[in-house]
Image (cartoon, rainbow, N blue to C red; front, side, top):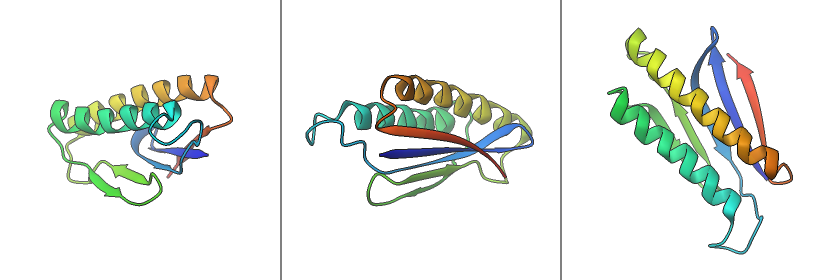
Length: 110
């Protein structure tokens, strides 16, 4: 099961954490894992490119990815990154609607 947490502070999405594996198909053919990876890594790349900010990233074993906008980012950068994180949330929720046995998403306030 993939667990995704989207972190909010003052109604602004400031980061996310994803962990686990969907196990919805054989290794190399797991569409849910592939979708979640594409969505989350695409979002990180978009934040870096479009917001000109390098988020704090921690990547580990078992599908673990933690991403947070650094405190040093400007308000404009934070607003743009938040918008991209919210777009990522919509994409992940679309996956969750079809594959709820393999992914859960929570919005958490900090």
